Image (cartoon, rainbow, N blue to C red; front, top):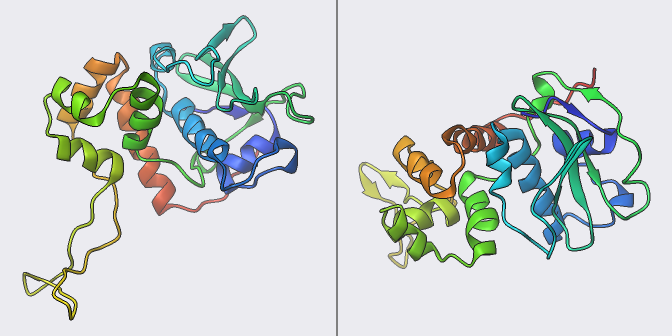
Length: 228
């Protein structure tokens, strides 16, 4: 859980998606998506092991554990998320790196319940794919065999699925006969699936459960952050 932010820019990005110009990337970049995912990971982490299992990316160490804080890279250009992790709470979370204006000394900006709801959070299947499977070169079908689930089920968690629209218990069809489907959305992970992923990734079940809850909160709520 994020207990406080290290600067206003990071807080505004988390709560409202405001992207400061000094950060040097845009909303369409891979860095933007990686930062959204990494902040969700930091907020959902329960124990240090949830973070220690993150793989090496961009040729950089996955996690730097330092006396005055920790750092996890999200960009090949040296940008990272810095924070202190104490008793399951991440303090002074901020974006840091090599570009001007990012690496200033951290402040302490506590957030209340409203500020803990992000403007955007990925589903846990996306975190699984981008931070645990792809960097290690693990294919979805291979992972499905290891945790003893069908490939289709794992694909639903990662890429989502679209249910058809029904009327009078019959699928609604277009003039050409094709079924009208709802927008594709990822499937929710069951408790059984979360326990299987926990065992394979050596993380905690609460970490994946928190990611799923954060995803639903970000989709359903649009409450402005409050800075204490």
